[in-house]
Image 1 (tube, one colour):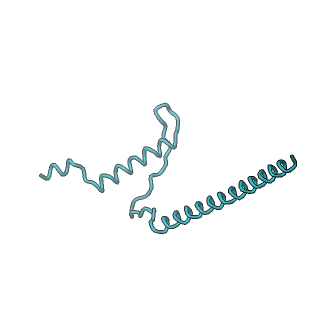
Image 2 (spheres, rainbow, N blue to C red):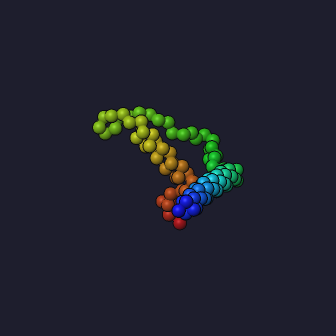
Image 3 (cartoon, rainbow, N blue to C red):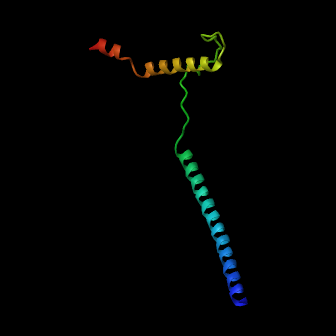
Length: 105
């Protein structure tokens, strides 16, 4: 009976060691994957530039607080409106309107 108990105890100990080894191996794999992801992100950053070239004479829209329809001042709405106007103006300068193209034909 002591032989079966000691054998069972050895199997449980061996299973514990295997679980610890598997956990350490999995942590190593995760660390390697994270390192590869960081390298890929750094390569992508160095290969492409996300900077938008500035156009001379144009600046970012300014935020001016104007009262909304309900009389409250909301800087976010004012900024959104001015940004929308700036984008529309930029779009018209890059892509001429279809009305002027129709009048030429």
